[in-house]
Image (cartoon, rainbow, N blue to C red; front, side, top):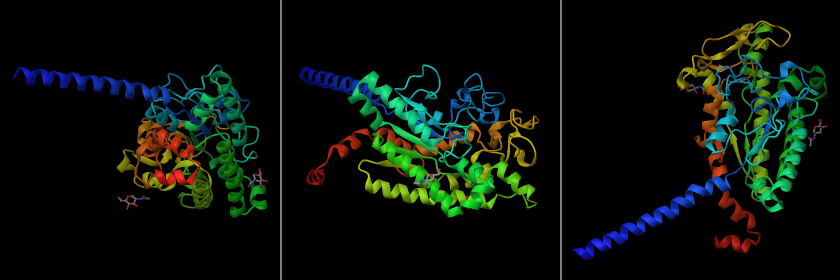
Length: 390
Ligand SMILES: *[C@@H]1O[C@H](CO)[C@@H](O)[C@H](O)[C@H]1NC(C)=O
Ligand SMILES: *[C@@H]1O[C@H](CO)[C@@H](O)[C@H](O)[C@H]1NC(C)=O
């Protein structure tokens, strides 16, 4: 009996020790090795960069009622009533809120947000009002340099390759850059224009890859023609105020082309991994079946004026000072005439993080943030004979 007890004691001590050791390992490892998040793109993900650039108030959102749910205390420049998708992604990844690049004395080790409301892939899109994609990549290069200076070459390289690059871009190229620009429409067919946008976007992805980026997340384009602003345009054209089909067709053409590009890059570029949302169908489902997802309205903007709240007046800083504000933003998909509410952003982040293959693929964001070891092994295997051993 005594023997049995001592045996038992030893066993429990060993188990306790083992648990203590392994818990210490798993407790500290994610903190030291977590992946940074770099965000590039437009107003869907801008967290305040436009507060610091020379632009018109219409390209800013650092005034009420933006940010009115009070999550950040006061308006931050996010084009929403509260948080946006990348804030939730950072939270799920165990990261703090990712600072805008232009915020003075921002820390870069957990990532940086380069996005700018109004930005497009093409420098021509909203020229002079926003930080276009190419410029955002230049800013990323600045951050890379500063990380190298601060943490040394090896650590900086590790941070850059472990980071997830989340990109939301293209909507402005089609909505402002093309559909509201008769000259562009004259010069380029739909196919040519989509080709130009995708060509430049591909170039950007290749530059980021060359700099060491390996893990990419893409927010594909939404059914642009169903945004309250574009429904309102359609309404003026004396139709039924349904979705503006030409805008939807451009978004679909863009999404199809981007999917092809990413599939081909995955085969061509060693270690390149990506996740892309099926944002188009995902959002159309919510627009048409809003009540199944906890919304009362999938068509009108909470903040704005005119048909569908589709005239972009939220906050009253643009040409028309009048705007109406709904009582409960959480009932709506659309916060203003082109931007989703925090509630929709949160549902989107969940879908990207670990949603079903119908919403996100070939990887989801959780895979990208947690697959570091696998990536490093693959990256270091140069000899195809060694690959077959694994
Ligand atoms: C990139 O966009 C410019 C217009 O800004 C266009 O002239 C050029 O052909 C595009 N490049 C690619 C690779 O498509
Ligand atoms: C709306 O939901 C129904 C099922 O309830 C589904 O058949 C339909 O495809 C959905 N609409 C969209 C646009 O996804």
